[in-house]
Image 1 (cartoon, helix red, strand yellow):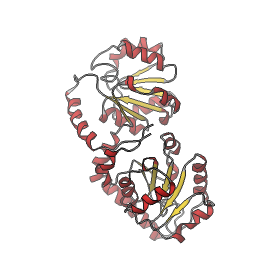
Image 2 (spheres, helix red, strand yellow):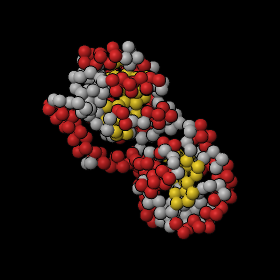
Image 3 (cartoon, helix red, strand yellow):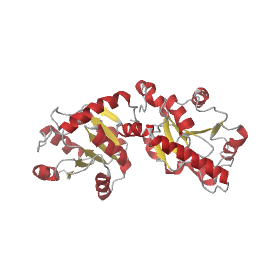
Image 4 (cartoon, helix red, strand yellow):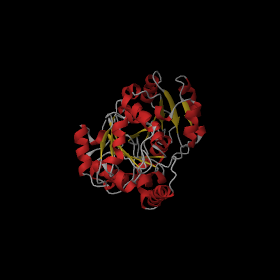
Length: 353
């Protein structure tokens, strides 16, 4: 697993505080998925992330800590506040959760010392916080996987605290829908893996990670553009893969194009769906619900960043980008290829096995 690379540590995301993920609360994060991707350490901000400002953590948060500890994560709290404000975490967890105070975020010097103390690698560490201009900024600069949560507002009875939390949330959305919007769209187009072709994917690893469904694009992923047949080597691959996975072909092409191959694919129990409307995820998500597959157990494989990969990422799938089989394609696709090249030069890498 190598969530970040030297390229991603040097790119523009070091100064643009865009998180890898954004959730309402710490309880909405898919920690099982993060564990599957190889992360070992979770760092939590304190105020408005784990508890309201100047208040102690509650039993629900303690229960989450116990769950994460049992999953094998190293857990720590990294706060800009004083020791007295967060020492309750150490006391309530009997020292299993380490606490670090006066961190001076968004500066990274003390955060790097925390990683050394925990014996944790940046590329295997997650930072979760509610402030994009401190927590997310320093996490990105340090090469961590960053997750933004909305400010903690449960059971807050102070008007001042409610206003503080609201202002923090508003500032992020102003940033997100102005300068940050472009970078967020580019981030959605980042796959977990780049490979040359569907034959270069490590399907055994996917099987061992409990993935159940493989979703393939059609044109320039499995066969050349406008072809209505599948090559023999692809059919042989499907015959092998169908023993371990469910398989879905999801294309934006017209549905009648696939009439000739449906009969062949039926013997492998492979579904074919035209008019997938990628990059919009709703048709594919509806289909996997019919197949009774969880999004975190699905892999989407395609040749286009701005259709296939965005659709997969928005659906919560593991995404793999392959090189197009042919240079023959629509004019609009050729235009998108130009923007793909620009995007690839600036993108940060996502977690992979």
